[in-house]
Amino acid sequence: QQQVKQSPQSLIVQKGGISIINCAYENTAFDYFPWYQQFPGKGPALLIAIRPDVSEKKEGRFTISFNKSAKQFSLHIMDSQPGDSATYFCAARRGDTDKLIFGTGTRLQVFP
Amino acid sequence: DGGITQSPKYLFRKEGQNVTLSCEQNLNHDAMYWYRQDPGQGLRLIYYSQIVNDFQKGDIAEGYSVSREKKESFPLTVTSAQKNPTAFYLCASTSRDRGTQHFGDGTRLSIL
Image (cartoon, rainbow over the protein chains, first blue to last red):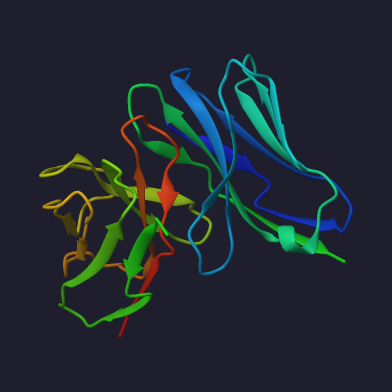
């Protein structure tokens, strides 16, 4: 119940295309769902986050879609750019703790 | 600039040796965390501390130890009992209002 399942493990997209990464969870006590972006040799950095009372959140080219009934959420990167090439992690936080449970990551490669 | 500083960036351990990884933050955050990152496994929680002089084991605490004598500092010791220490270690912190976790840029530990 503590797991967050992330797919795909890797993703190759052409420049200008849409990148889609999916995550699923079981624990209904999760109340905060962030996405992190990590470049090689660096720590993860918060990209965008959503709470379960919202079905979609958009920030620039990045959108989170959230389906509470299906316990799924996804990251969409519109107009993908080579600079978006990185590893992306979804995560979930239980309401009564500060601990994050991370997905296993998706390595995105955007080719020109 | 406020942030989290991890040092050293690269560290080598000899057999039977304990090594200590440094994590310092000047964000005035209350909670601090240590994660281990292995390829294809996401981030796994080693230890966390929500307040000075208190800390709790995470999911993979065996072979590790921590201390939290100051709010700003949360060093991690990888002991000789940790038989597979080669990994990328990440430190994070978050504020009392349980905002997003901020990460340092990690320490890569290897075995000589």
